[in-house]
Image: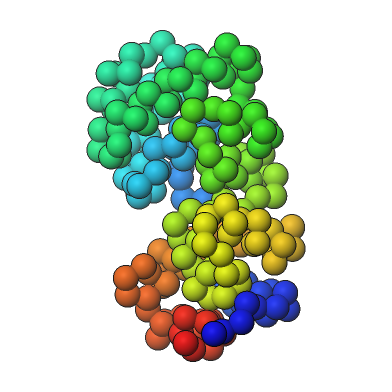
Length: 212
């Protein structure tokens, strides 16, 4: 079986991915921590492109926790129907907005402990918000990060949470956030779930999946 990459190999892989994806960044359009929080909740099992279409209109009118606290769940559902799982997401957005208003003065917490207490906010969503809204180093493990990092061999884990902690050990802290974006971009554009485009991959010569 192929071995897990060394730290030196991991750095080389990330450097190559940075060359292949120089535009890697958070693709959820937002202008505040709260907008990013809502967008990330909406992004579960939904593309960022679709989320951005929905939030572009929604955020013009409603972009504060108080706004969503005052809306009915049905009103929120009507705005986010095309995102999928909209009933559950609408409920979580309203509940989270109410908590932010009642307990946090309408502000999004800037720490993991408080963020993960919010409805609809797991470690992945918290990581996205912390790293992109507050500049806190984090590796949010979504389906792309989980698939790509394990395929390459940077880590060898069976769950997103185990993958997150393994990546935090394998990657220098100052590169956590950017590495998260690199792995997502590579997963979307090259290392796709069903048919990875290995011929278009800058790291295929170092990839466990390709060599195996």
